[in-house]
Image (cartoon, rainbow, N blue to C red; front, side, top):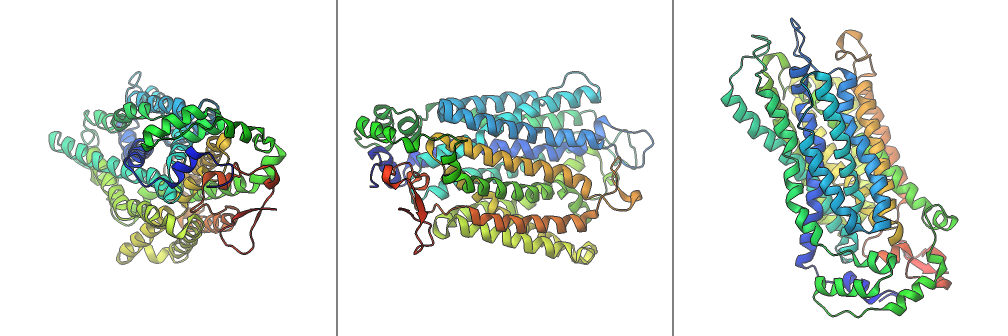
Length: 540
Protein backbone atom coordinates (compact mmCIF):
# COMPACT_ATOMS: atom_id res chain seq x y z
CA UNK A 1 0.00 0.00 0.00
CA UNK A 2 1.35 3.43 -0.94
CA UNK A 3 2.63 5.55 1.93
CA UNK A 4 -0.12 7.78 3.24
CA UNK A 5 -2.90 6.02 1.34
CA UNK A 6 -6.05 5.31 3.30
CA UNK A 7 -6.94 1.68 3.91
CA UNK A 8 -10.44 2.16 2.50
CA UNK A 9 -9.04 3.45 -0.81
CA UNK A 10 -6.47 0.71 -0.96
CA UNK A 11 -9.24 -1.84 -0.39
CA UNK A 12 -11.08 -0.44 -3.42
CA UNK A 13 -7.89 -0.48 -5.50
CA UNK A 14 -7.11 -4.12 -4.89
CA UNK A 15 -10.70 -5.44 -4.69
CA UNK A 16 -11.51 -8.35 -6.96
CA UNK A 17 -14.10 -7.69 -9.64
CA UNK A 18 -17.42 -8.13 -7.84
CA UNK A 19 -21.12 -7.78 -8.42
CA UNK A 20 -21.16 -4.13 -7.27
CA UNK A 21 -18.78 -3.24 -10.11
CA UNK A 22 -21.33 -4.48 -12.63
CA UNK A 23 -24.26 -2.75 -10.96
CA UNK A 24 -22.22 0.48 -11.05
CA UNK A 25 -21.55 -0.03 -14.78
CA UNK A 26 -25.25 -0.60 -15.50
CA UNK A 27 -26.50 2.27 -13.32
CA UNK A 28 -23.93 4.75 -14.66
CA UNK A 29 -24.13 3.30 -18.17
CA UNK A 30 -27.89 3.71 -18.43
CA UNK A 31 -27.37 7.45 -18.31
CA UNK A 32 -25.13 7.15 -21.36
CA UNK A 33 -27.56 4.84 -23.06
CA UNK A 34 -30.16 7.59 -22.71
CA UNK A 35 -27.68 10.31 -23.70
CA UNK A 36 -26.83 8.58 -26.95
CA UNK A 37 -30.45 7.71 -27.67
CA UNK A 38 -31.57 11.30 -27.12
CA UNK A 39 -28.73 12.98 -29.00
CA UNK A 40 -28.87 10.68 -32.01
CA UNK A 41 -32.61 10.05 -32.34
CA UNK A 42 -33.11 13.62 -33.50
CA UNK A 43 -31.12 12.90 -36.65
CA UNK A 44 -33.65 10.16 -37.45
CA UNK A 45 -36.60 12.53 -37.44
CA UNK A 46 -35.27 15.82 -38.88
CA UNK A 47 -36.32 14.89 -42.44
CA UNK A 48 -39.79 14.00 -41.15
CA UNK A 49 -40.10 17.33 -39.31
CA UNK A 50 -39.25 19.07 -42.59
CA UNK A 51 -42.00 17.20 -44.44
CA UNK A 52 -44.63 17.85 -41.80
CA UNK A 53 -43.95 21.49 -40.95
CA UNK A 54 -42.16 22.95 -43.97
CA UNK A 55 -44.12 21.52 -46.88
CA UNK A 56 -44.14 23.79 -49.95
CA UNK A 57 -47.06 23.31 -52.35
CA UNK A 58 -45.96 22.38 -55.85
CA UNK A 59 -42.30 21.83 -54.87
CA UNK A 60 -40.45 19.05 -56.66
CA UNK A 61 -38.78 17.80 -53.43
CA UNK A 62 -40.43 17.18 -50.03
CA UNK A 63 -40.24 20.00 -47.47
CA UNK A 64 -37.03 20.25 -45.44
CA UNK A 65 -36.01 22.24 -42.38
CA UNK A 66 -34.49 25.63 -43.28
CA UNK A 67 -30.75 25.73 -42.43
CA UNK A 68 -31.15 27.91 -39.33
CA UNK A 69 -33.97 25.70 -37.94
CA UNK A 70 -32.06 22.52 -38.76
CA UNK A 71 -28.97 23.88 -37.01
CA UNK A 72 -31.04 24.88 -33.97
CA UNK A 73 -32.85 21.53 -33.67
CA UNK A 74 -29.66 19.51 -34.08
CA UNK A 75 -27.37 21.78 -32.14
CA UNK A 76 -29.30 23.15 -29.22
CA UNK A 77 -28.81 19.92 -27.24
CA UNK A 78 -25.04 20.22 -27.78
CA UNK A 79 -25.08 23.74 -26.34
CA UNK A 80 -27.05 22.48 -23.34
CA UNK A 81 -24.63 19.57 -22.90
CA UNK A 82 -21.63 21.90 -22.91
CA UNK A 83 -23.19 24.10 -20.22
CA UNK A 84 -24.25 21.04 -18.19
CA UNK A 85 -20.77 19.50 -18.28
CA UNK A 86 -19.20 22.64 -16.83
CA UNK A 87 -21.93 23.31 -14.27
CA UNK A 88 -22.53 19.77 -12.95
CA UNK A 89 -18.81 18.95 -13.16
CA UNK A 90 -18.14 21.82 -10.75
CA UNK A 91 -21.17 20.93 -8.62
CA UNK A 92 -20.08 17.29 -8.36
CA UNK A 93 -16.90 18.42 -6.62
CA UNK A 94 -18.73 20.89 -4.41
CA UNK A 95 -21.74 18.83 -3.20
CA UNK A 96 -20.60 15.28 -3.88
CA UNK A 97 -21.15 12.94 -6.81
CA UNK A 98 -24.24 11.22 -5.51
CA UNK A 99 -26.30 14.30 -4.65
CA UNK A 100 -25.92 15.75 -8.13
CA UNK A 101 -26.35 12.41 -9.90
CA UNK A 102 -30.08 12.20 -9.23
CA UNK A 103 -30.66 15.78 -10.40
CA UNK A 104 -29.17 15.17 -13.83
CA UNK A 105 -31.28 12.04 -14.31
CA UNK A 106 -34.55 13.72 -13.37
CA UNK A 107 -33.77 16.56 -15.75
CA UNK A 108 -33.19 14.06 -18.56
CA UNK A 109 -36.45 12.21 -17.90
CA UNK A 110 -38.61 15.35 -17.68
CA UNK A 111 -37.09 17.03 -20.73
CA UNK A 112 -37.19 13.87 -22.87
CA UNK A 113 -40.93 13.67 -22.33
CA UNK A 114 -41.46 17.42 -22.71
CA UNK A 115 -39.55 17.63 -25.99
CA UNK A 116 -42.22 15.42 -27.56
CA UNK A 117 -44.99 17.83 -26.50
CA UNK A 118 -45.50 21.11 -28.31
CA UNK A 119 -47.27 24.36 -27.56
CA UNK A 120 -49.33 25.31 -30.59
CA UNK A 121 -49.46 23.85 -34.07
CA UNK A 122 -47.47 26.41 -36.03
CA UNK A 123 -44.02 25.32 -37.25
CA UNK A 124 -42.48 28.12 -35.19
CA UNK A 125 -44.25 27.06 -32.00
CA UNK A 126 -43.37 23.39 -32.43
CA UNK A 127 -39.70 24.08 -33.21
CA UNK A 128 -39.36 26.60 -30.37
CA UNK A 129 -40.75 24.11 -27.81
CA UNK A 130 -38.60 21.31 -29.19
CA UNK A 131 -35.47 23.47 -29.01
CA UNK A 132 -36.23 24.77 -25.53
CA UNK A 133 -36.65 21.32 -24.00
CA UNK A 134 -33.77 19.81 -25.96
CA UNK A 135 -31.49 22.48 -24.52
CA UNK A 136 -32.40 21.45 -20.97
CA UNK A 137 -32.27 17.78 -21.94
CA UNK A 138 -28.71 18.46 -23.11
CA UNK A 139 -28.00 20.24 -19.82
CA UNK A 140 -28.93 17.08 -17.90
CA UNK A 141 -26.99 14.87 -20.30
CA UNK A 142 -23.96 17.13 -19.84
CA UNK A 143 -23.97 16.50 -16.11
CA UNK A 144 -23.89 12.78 -16.71
CA UNK A 145 -20.47 12.90 -18.40
CA UNK A 146 -18.26 14.05 -15.51
CA UNK A 147 -20.36 12.36 -12.84
CA UNK A 148 -20.60 8.90 -14.43
CA UNK A 149 -16.90 8.86 -15.30
CA UNK A 150 -15.85 10.05 -11.85
CA UNK A 151 -18.15 7.69 -9.95
CA UNK A 152 -16.99 4.70 -11.99
CA UNK A 153 -13.30 5.58 -11.68
CA UNK A 154 -13.64 6.06 -7.91
CA UNK A 155 -15.47 2.76 -7.43
CA UNK A 156 -13.22 0.64 -9.65
CA UNK A 157 -10.11 -1.34 -8.75
CA UNK A 158 -6.88 -0.24 -10.38
CA UNK A 159 -6.42 -3.39 -12.47
CA UNK A 160 -9.63 -3.11 -14.49
CA UNK A 161 -10.53 0.55 -13.96
CA UNK A 162 -10.05 1.50 -17.62
CA UNK A 163 -12.35 -1.28 -18.81
CA UNK A 164 -15.06 -0.30 -16.32
CA UNK A 165 -15.06 3.40 -17.27
CA UNK A 166 -14.94 2.47 -20.96
CA UNK A 167 -17.85 0.04 -20.45
CA UNK A 168 -19.98 2.89 -19.04
CA UNK A 169 -19.15 4.94 -22.13
CA UNK A 170 -19.73 1.96 -24.44
CA UNK A 171 -23.38 1.94 -23.42
CA UNK A 172 -23.64 4.84 -25.87
CA UNK A 173 -23.28 2.32 -28.66
CA UNK A 174 -26.31 0.43 -27.39
CA UNK A 175 -28.21 3.70 -27.07
CA UNK A 176 -27.59 4.54 -30.73
CA UNK A 177 -28.53 0.98 -31.68
CA UNK A 178 -31.70 1.11 -29.57
CA UNK A 179 -32.67 4.43 -31.17
CA UNK A 180 -32.30 2.93 -34.63
CA UNK A 181 -34.10 -0.32 -33.83
CA UNK A 182 -36.97 1.41 -32.03
CA UNK A 183 -37.43 3.81 -34.96
CA UNK A 184 -37.47 0.82 -37.35
CA UNK A 185 -40.17 -0.94 -35.34
CA UNK A 186 -42.39 2.12 -34.90
CA UNK A 187 -42.03 3.32 -38.50
CA UNK A 188 -42.83 -0.20 -39.82
CA UNK A 189 -45.94 -0.32 -37.65
CA UNK A 190 -47.05 3.16 -38.80
CA UNK A 191 -46.33 2.30 -42.42
CA UNK A 192 -48.43 -0.85 -42.21
CA UNK A 193 -51.30 0.94 -40.42
CA UNK A 194 -51.38 4.15 -42.50
CA UNK A 195 -50.71 3.48 -46.16
CA UNK A 196 -49.50 6.49 -48.13
CA UNK A 197 -48.30 7.12 -51.72
CA UNK A 198 -44.78 8.34 -52.56
CA UNK A 199 -44.17 12.10 -52.61
CA UNK A 200 -43.87 12.23 -56.40
CA UNK A 201 -47.31 10.56 -56.79
CA UNK A 202 -49.18 12.72 -54.29
CA UNK A 203 -47.19 15.33 -52.32
CA UNK A 204 -49.92 16.05 -49.74
CA UNK A 205 -51.07 12.47 -49.08
CA UNK A 206 -47.47 11.17 -48.81
CA UNK A 207 -47.28 12.64 -45.29
CA UNK A 208 -50.13 11.12 -43.29
CA UNK A 209 -51.42 13.20 -40.32
CA UNK A 210 -50.40 10.39 -37.95
CA UNK A 211 -46.73 10.97 -38.88
CA UNK A 212 -46.82 13.81 -36.36
CA UNK A 213 -47.14 11.20 -33.60
CA UNK A 214 -44.27 9.12 -34.97
CA UNK A 215 -41.47 11.60 -34.23
CA UNK A 216 -42.95 12.43 -30.81
CA UNK A 217 -43.00 8.77 -29.79
CA UNK A 218 -39.39 8.26 -30.92
CA UNK A 219 -38.21 11.34 -29.01
CA UNK A 220 -40.16 10.62 -25.81
CA UNK A 221 -39.18 6.97 -25.36
CA UNK A 222 -35.70 8.20 -24.42
CA UNK A 223 -37.09 8.91 -20.95
CA UNK A 224 -37.78 5.24 -20.17
CA UNK A 225 -34.32 3.75 -19.52
CA UNK A 226 -33.30 6.79 -17.45
CA UNK A 227 -36.44 6.62 -15.32
CA UNK A 228 -35.89 2.90 -14.69
CA UNK A 229 -32.44 3.44 -13.17
CA UNK A 230 -33.39 6.38 -10.92
CA UNK A 231 -34.10 4.16 -7.90
CA UNK A 232 -30.71 2.42 -8.11
CA UNK A 233 -28.89 5.70 -8.60
CA UNK A 234 -30.34 6.97 -5.38
CA UNK A 235 -29.32 3.81 -3.52
CA UNK A 236 -25.62 4.00 -4.51
CA UNK A 237 -23.52 5.29 -1.62
CA UNK A 238 -21.28 8.34 -2.15
CA UNK A 239 -17.84 7.31 -3.43
CA UNK A 240 -15.26 6.71 -0.70
CA UNK A 241 -12.77 8.98 -2.42
CA UNK A 242 -15.14 11.93 -2.21
CA UNK A 243 -16.22 11.16 1.35
CA UNK A 244 -12.66 10.64 2.62
CA UNK A 245 -10.50 12.99 0.55
CA UNK A 246 -12.92 15.87 -0.10
CA UNK A 247 -15.58 15.73 2.65
CA UNK A 248 -12.92 14.43 5.13
CA UNK A 249 -15.34 11.99 6.75
CA UNK A 250 -13.32 8.80 7.30
CA UNK A 251 -16.01 7.12 9.38
CA UNK A 252 -18.67 7.46 6.69
CA UNK A 253 -16.26 6.34 3.95
CA UNK A 254 -15.29 3.22 5.90
CA UNK A 255 -18.88 2.29 6.76
CA UNK A 256 -20.12 2.85 3.15
CA UNK A 257 -17.37 0.76 1.62
CA UNK A 258 -17.61 -1.96 4.28
CA UNK A 259 -21.16 -2.54 3.02
CA UNK A 260 -20.16 -2.42 -0.64
CA UNK A 261 -17.02 -4.56 -0.37
CA UNK A 262 -18.45 -6.73 2.42
CA UNK A 263 -15.28 -6.48 4.50
CA UNK A 264 -14.51 -4.78 7.81
CA UNK A 265 -12.74 -1.45 7.35
CA UNK A 266 -11.61 0.82 10.16
CA UNK A 267 -12.12 4.59 10.04
CA UNK A 268 -8.78 6.39 9.79
CA UNK A 269 -9.59 9.86 11.11
CA UNK A 270 -5.98 10.55 12.03
CA UNK A 271 -4.63 9.73 8.60
CA UNK A 272 -7.15 12.03 6.97
CA UNK A 273 -6.03 14.85 9.26
CA UNK A 274 -2.40 14.12 8.33
CA UNK A 275 -3.26 14.26 4.65
CA UNK A 276 -5.14 17.47 5.30
CA UNK A 277 -2.16 19.06 7.04
CA UNK A 278 -0.12 18.51 3.90
CA UNK A 279 -0.81 21.97 2.53
CA UNK A 280 0.60 21.02 -0.87
CA UNK A 281 -2.62 19.17 -1.58
CA UNK A 282 -4.96 22.09 -1.00
CA UNK A 283 -4.33 23.90 -4.28
CA UNK A 284 -7.26 25.07 -6.40
CA UNK A 285 -8.00 24.86 -10.11
CA UNK A 286 -6.62 28.32 -10.91
CA UNK A 287 -3.49 28.05 -8.77
CA UNK A 288 0.13 27.96 -9.95
CA UNK A 289 0.52 24.59 -8.26
CA UNK A 290 -2.29 23.10 -10.38
CA UNK A 291 -0.75 24.60 -13.50
CA UNK A 292 2.63 23.13 -12.60
CA UNK A 293 1.32 19.66 -11.79
CA UNK A 294 -1.62 19.23 -14.12
CA UNK A 295 -1.64 22.16 -16.55
CA UNK A 296 -0.28 20.17 -19.49
CA UNK A 297 -2.49 17.22 -18.59
CA UNK A 298 -5.59 19.42 -18.78
CA UNK A 299 -4.40 20.90 -22.09
CA UNK A 300 -3.89 17.34 -23.35
CA UNK A 301 -7.33 16.07 -22.31
CA UNK A 302 -9.20 19.17 -23.56
CA UNK A 303 -7.40 19.46 -26.92
CA UNK A 304 -7.62 15.77 -27.85
CA UNK A 305 -11.33 15.60 -26.98
CA UNK A 306 -11.98 18.84 -28.90
CA UNK A 307 -10.21 17.59 -32.04
CA UNK A 308 -11.76 14.14 -31.86
CA UNK A 309 -15.32 15.48 -31.62
CA UNK A 310 -14.86 17.78 -34.63
CA UNK A 311 -14.20 14.66 -36.70
CA UNK A 312 -16.65 12.41 -34.90
CA UNK A 313 -19.73 14.61 -35.08
CA UNK A 314 -19.15 15.99 -38.56
CA UNK A 315 -19.26 12.38 -39.80
CA UNK A 316 -22.48 11.72 -37.96
CA UNK A 317 -24.16 14.69 -39.51
CA UNK A 318 -23.24 14.24 -43.10
CA UNK A 319 -24.00 10.56 -42.68
CA UNK A 320 -27.44 10.94 -44.25
CA UNK A 321 -25.93 12.58 -47.32
CA UNK A 322 -23.29 9.85 -47.60
CA UNK A 323 -26.00 7.19 -47.39
CA UNK A 324 -27.93 8.92 -50.15
CA UNK A 325 -24.79 9.28 -52.28
CA UNK A 326 -23.99 5.57 -52.02
CA UNK A 327 -27.60 4.53 -52.58
CA UNK A 328 -28.61 3.20 -49.15
CA UNK A 329 -31.33 5.81 -48.95
CA UNK A 330 -33.29 6.39 -52.18
CA UNK A 331 -34.20 9.89 -53.36
CA UNK A 332 -36.70 11.50 -50.94
CA UNK A 333 -39.42 12.04 -53.55
CA UNK A 334 -39.67 8.28 -54.27
CA UNK A 335 -40.82 7.59 -50.67
CA UNK A 336 -43.58 8.66 -48.37
CA UNK A 337 -42.69 10.37 -45.06
CA UNK A 338 -42.76 7.26 -42.87
CA UNK A 339 -40.77 5.14 -45.33
CA UNK A 340 -38.05 7.77 -45.23
CA UNK A 341 -37.74 7.48 -41.43
CA UNK A 342 -37.50 3.71 -41.84
CA UNK A 343 -34.73 3.93 -44.46
CA UNK A 344 -32.65 6.46 -42.45
CA UNK A 345 -33.06 4.37 -39.28
CA UNK A 346 -32.03 1.22 -41.17
CA UNK A 347 -28.84 2.85 -42.45
CA UNK A 348 -27.91 4.22 -39.00
CA UNK A 349 -28.60 0.89 -37.33
CA UNK A 350 -26.39 -0.97 -39.81
CA UNK A 351 -23.50 1.44 -39.24
CA UNK A 352 -23.96 1.18 -35.45
CA UNK A 353 -24.10 -2.61 -35.58
CA UNK A 354 -21.08 -3.04 -37.85
CA UNK A 355 -18.68 -0.41 -36.60
CA UNK A 356 -19.85 1.75 -33.70
CA UNK A 357 -20.75 -0.94 -31.15
CA UNK A 358 -17.81 -3.31 -31.85
CA UNK A 359 -15.35 -0.38 -31.60
CA UNK A 360 -16.48 0.52 -28.09
CA UNK A 361 -16.17 -3.04 -26.81
CA UNK A 362 -12.74 -3.53 -28.37
CA UNK A 363 -11.64 -0.62 -26.17
CA UNK A 364 -13.18 -2.28 -23.11
CA UNK A 365 -11.31 -5.50 -23.89
CA UNK A 366 -7.89 -3.97 -24.54
CA UNK A 367 -7.63 -0.73 -22.53
CA UNK A 368 -6.08 -2.36 -19.45
CA UNK A 369 -3.80 -4.55 -21.54
CA UNK A 370 -2.23 -2.10 -24.00
CA UNK A 371 -3.04 1.13 -22.16
CA UNK A 372 -4.91 4.36 -22.91
CA UNK A 373 -2.05 6.07 -24.73
CA UNK A 374 -1.53 3.27 -27.29
CA UNK A 375 -5.25 3.00 -28.07
CA UNK A 376 -5.62 6.78 -28.52
CA UNK A 377 -2.55 7.03 -30.78
CA UNK A 378 -3.66 4.09 -32.87
CA UNK A 379 -7.21 5.42 -33.19
CA UNK A 380 -6.14 8.89 -34.32
CA UNK A 381 -3.59 7.37 -36.72
CA UNK A 382 -6.11 5.13 -38.49
CA UNK A 383 -8.78 7.83 -38.54
CA UNK A 384 -6.29 10.09 -40.32
CA UNK A 385 -5.38 7.35 -42.80
CA UNK A 386 -9.00 6.46 -43.63
CA UNK A 387 -10.10 10.09 -43.92
CA UNK A 388 -7.39 10.78 -46.48
CA UNK A 389 -8.16 7.47 -48.22
CA UNK A 390 -11.80 8.58 -48.57
CA UNK A 391 -10.94 12.15 -49.54
CA UNK A 392 -8.14 11.97 -52.08
CA UNK A 393 -9.80 9.55 -54.53
CA UNK A 394 -13.28 10.86 -53.58
CA UNK A 395 -14.57 10.84 -57.17
CA UNK A 396 -13.61 7.17 -57.45
CA UNK A 397 -15.83 6.32 -54.46
CA UNK A 398 -18.89 8.04 -55.90
CA UNK A 399 -19.20 5.56 -58.81
CA UNK A 400 -21.91 2.96 -58.27
CA UNK A 401 -19.53 -0.02 -58.49
CA UNK A 402 -17.30 1.35 -55.69
CA UNK A 403 -20.02 2.15 -53.18
CA UNK A 404 -19.43 -0.86 -50.98
CA UNK A 405 -15.75 0.04 -50.60
CA UNK A 406 -16.74 3.55 -49.54
CA UNK A 407 -19.11 2.24 -46.85
CA UNK A 408 -16.44 -0.18 -45.54
CA UNK A 409 -13.83 2.61 -45.28
CA UNK A 410 -16.39 4.89 -43.69
CA UNK A 411 -17.28 2.19 -41.13
CA UNK A 412 -13.61 1.62 -40.34
CA UNK A 413 -13.15 5.32 -39.58
CA UNK A 414 -15.95 4.98 -37.05
CA UNK A 415 -14.59 1.74 -35.68
CA UNK A 416 -11.22 3.36 -34.94
CA UNK A 417 -12.86 6.42 -33.43
CA UNK A 418 -14.54 4.15 -30.88
CA UNK A 419 -11.64 1.71 -30.52
CA UNK A 420 -9.55 4.81 -30.02
CA UNK A 421 -9.92 8.40 -28.87
CA UNK A 422 -13.71 8.50 -28.53
CA UNK A 423 -13.43 6.12 -25.57
CA UNK A 424 -10.01 7.08 -24.18
CA UNK A 425 -10.71 10.83 -24.07
CA UNK A 426 -13.60 9.96 -21.74
CA UNK A 427 -11.60 7.58 -19.53
CA UNK A 428 -8.36 9.49 -18.90
CA UNK A 429 -9.68 12.76 -17.38
CA UNK A 430 -11.47 10.69 -14.73
CA UNK A 431 -8.15 9.18 -13.61
CA UNK A 432 -5.38 11.78 -13.61
CA UNK A 433 -6.70 14.71 -11.55
CA UNK A 434 -7.04 15.05 -7.74
CA UNK A 435 -10.33 13.94 -6.13
CA UNK A 436 -11.52 17.44 -5.20
CA UNK A 437 -11.06 18.67 -8.81
CA UNK A 438 -11.71 15.41 -10.66
CA UNK A 439 -15.31 16.02 -11.64
CA UNK A 440 -14.59 19.66 -12.58
CA UNK A 441 -11.61 18.78 -14.79
CA UNK A 442 -13.56 15.99 -16.46
CA UNK A 443 -16.39 18.46 -17.09
CA UNK A 444 -13.97 20.98 -18.63
CA UNK A 445 -12.45 18.30 -20.90
CA UNK A 446 -15.89 17.06 -21.92
CA UNK A 447 -17.16 20.60 -22.58
CA UNK A 448 -14.15 21.21 -24.79
CA UNK A 449 -15.19 18.06 -26.67
CA UNK A 450 -18.72 19.35 -27.08
CA UNK A 451 -17.33 22.60 -28.44
CA UNK A 452 -15.60 20.44 -31.04
CA UNK A 453 -18.90 18.68 -31.71
CA UNK A 454 -20.59 22.03 -32.35
CA UNK A 455 -17.78 23.04 -34.74
CA UNK A 456 -17.99 19.63 -36.42
CA UNK A 457 -21.75 19.55 -36.68
CA UNK A 458 -22.35 23.13 -37.83
CA UNK A 459 -19.12 24.07 -39.50
CA UNK A 460 -19.39 21.02 -41.71
CA UNK A 461 -23.08 21.46 -42.49
CA UNK A 462 -21.92 24.55 -44.35
CA UNK A 463 -18.47 23.37 -45.44
CA UNK A 464 -19.65 20.12 -47.02
CA UNK A 465 -22.04 21.94 -49.38
CA UNK A 466 -21.14 21.70 -53.05
CA UNK A 467 -19.00 24.47 -54.59
CA UNK A 468 -21.55 24.61 -57.39
CA UNK A 469 -24.36 27.03 -56.42
CA UNK A 470 -27.00 24.97 -58.23
CA UNK A 471 -26.21 21.80 -56.25
CA UNK A 472 -26.34 23.13 -52.67
CA UNK A 473 -29.14 22.16 -50.26
CA UNK A 474 -32.00 24.65 -50.03
CA UNK A 475 -30.94 27.81 -48.21
CA UNK A 476 -27.24 27.02 -47.85
CA UNK A 477 -24.41 29.02 -49.43
CA UNK A 478 -21.84 27.05 -51.52
CA UNK A 479 -19.17 25.31 -49.40
CA UNK A 480 -15.88 23.55 -50.17
CA UNK A 481 -17.52 20.23 -51.08
CA UNK A 482 -17.39 16.83 -49.37
CA UNK A 483 -13.93 15.97 -50.73
CA UNK A 484 -12.21 19.02 -49.24
CA UNK A 485 -14.19 18.64 -46.01
CA UNK A 486 -12.79 15.13 -45.62
CA UNK A 487 -9.25 16.46 -46.18
CA UNK A 488 -9.81 19.05 -43.42
CA UNK A 489 -11.01 16.25 -41.11
CA UNK A 490 -7.88 14.22 -41.91
CA UNK A 491 -5.74 17.15 -40.76
CA UNK A 492 -7.84 17.52 -37.58
CA UNK A 493 -7.19 13.84 -36.73
CA UNK A 494 -3.47 14.32 -37.33
CA UNK A 495 -3.43 17.19 -34.81
CA UNK A 496 -5.26 14.96 -32.32
CA UNK A 497 -2.46 12.41 -32.68
CA UNK A 498 0.15 15.07 -31.83
CA UNK A 499 -1.70 16.41 -28.77
CA UNK A 500 -2.03 12.85 -27.40
CA UNK A 501 1.63 13.13 -26.33
CA UNK A 502 0.56 15.52 -23.53
CA UNK A 503 -1.61 12.89 -21.83
CA UNK A 504 0.02 10.59 -19.21
CA UNK A 505 -0.57 6.84 -19.08
CA UNK A 506 -2.67 5.76 -16.09
CA UNK A 507 -2.88 2.00 -16.70
CA UNK A 508 -2.53 -0.07 -13.54
CA UNK A 509 -1.98 2.85 -11.15
CA UNK A 510 -4.10 4.01 -8.25
CA UNK A 511 -5.94 7.32 -8.66
CA UNK A 512 -3.95 8.84 -5.79
CA UNK A 513 -0.68 7.85 -7.44
CA UNK A 514 -1.73 9.60 -10.66
CA UNK A 515 -2.86 12.79 -8.93
CA UNK A 516 -0.08 12.85 -6.32
CA UNK A 517 -2.60 13.03 -3.46
CA UNK A 518 -0.88 10.55 -1.17
CA UNK A 519 2.56 12.10 -1.60
CA UNK A 520 4.01 13.51 1.58
CA UNK A 521 5.49 17.01 1.81
CA UNK A 522 8.94 15.92 0.70
CA UNK A 523 7.64 14.23 -2.40
CA UNK A 524 5.68 17.14 -3.79
CA UNK A 525 7.81 17.37 -6.91
CA UNK A 526 7.08 14.65 -9.35
CA UNK A 527 9.09 13.79 -12.38
CA UNK A 528 9.08 11.05 -14.93
CA UNK A 529 11.35 8.15 -14.14
CA UNK A 530 13.50 8.00 -17.27
CA UNK A 531 13.91 4.24 -17.01
CA UNK A 532 10.22 3.61 -17.46
CA UNK A 533 7.77 4.27 -20.25
CA UNK A 534 4.92 4.30 -17.79
CA UNK A 535 5.76 7.80 -16.55
CA UNK A 536 5.99 6.43 -13.02
CA UNK A 537 6.06 9.26 -10.47
CA UNK A 538 9.15 9.32 -8.29
CA UNK A 539 10.05 11.63 -5.41
CA UNK A 540 12.89 13.98 -6.26
